[in-house]
Image 1 (cartoon, rainbow over the protein chains, first blue to last red):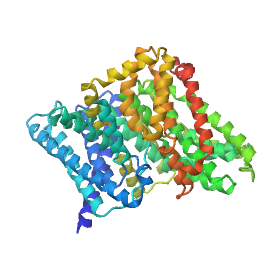
Image 2: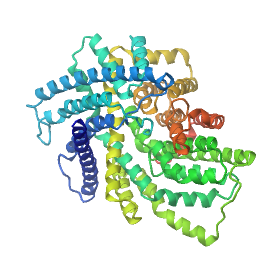
Image 3: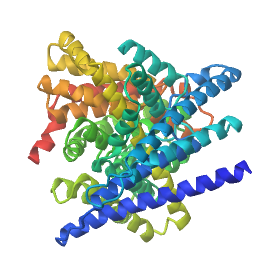
Length: 160
Length: 426
């Protein structure tokens, strides 16, 4: 049951990732192209910023599931496995508390910003903020799943 | 205050909390103790991301990933092989030169290590290179992806330290060529002494060589388009990134190397790679607030002004600090957290921002290969042998670190290496 829920959340987030990154490519390409034919599309910059914000927060929660977040595992790997599990649990609980606080205040901010609209596109600003509480709720879910069913990570494969 | 923040920060980091959330939770705790409304946390997180320039990050990541898997690597490798393969240690040098070529189409170190390593490591093993030597050169060769433009590190540095990204790109050329050359010389000497790669030397007839050049022509046009576009002022860095995405996409269709499923995977992994970088920037924006509220940047600045009386002393102190931090932490967060603090101080010392930017970039490259926490080195090990620990790379990796440190010193002492080409474009 839990597994099906997880699979569906992962699928949803992956699709949103594909949509946002494709959207960004298309928008910037349109911008370059339209400049060369001397035609400007209003609001593209704002839409692009919206997509970057969505990409960042949603991607960050999926990255928790994929264990892609950058971190320093070296020192933890020096102690025995029993202690490792204990340390991981401690860190996971801290993360859940941290994410909960962000979710709550992110939700408050979203509600407060529903009445104001963005400058060009006239979208409610809440639409920009709402991705923060939503993503961190997903993040909490993924951390809980990781506590219940720890899986080996692929840490250290992403860097610049 | 600063001591408490530092202790908390390193404790959480070393206990394995991801760096983004370490920065975030330390900031949150500081806000709580400073009795500041926590809504500010979310506002600053949001403001940190709400910036048009950050578009360049996902686009360059995507471009690099498409190029890495779209069949460009083997064509670039064939060219590198034709150029340096005939000398002693030829295949080792080929690995470095391919990484340099690949660095000119991709902006990431680990992507470079994986793309080049997956093709060349099996061949190096056949030619009797020891695993320890392979891992020591294939990981560090990947940092050429960071030094040679385009470079995602430079994009982040440009944004956070407020330097022209285009100029940083141009500045990276000479240091990149310099490091490539020095690494090749080292590999050649070491291979001769240890008897690596003596089985066969690749030789080419003239007609074969022309064919290889023709094959590598389209991949090599990528940097021409990207950098040519930026340098000529026709497009911005962000727009150049989108051109790179489209060009890489067309090439991989042309080479028939990307299935639709593979392409979808690349998009998701590029989105995630970008997200984990930008989320660090997002939390760092809260952290910067905490630091500024406690007047810490000013204290850091005073510290330098007190102990470093000349620009040169300042650069060396910065390098030593980054070297120490670089062995213990991950590089991207160092750029994001420290460059906005260091840059204004460098300007006070009268250092050219491009020169300082390049010194930072070279130090970040070095931080990527210093154990125990050096992600390029770890990538080099994992691609050589899944079970290989970084301690197995000794002693060769120490030579490489020495070589890169030597190049860092050259960049510090001779500003012209960084500034001469950007100044041509003034």
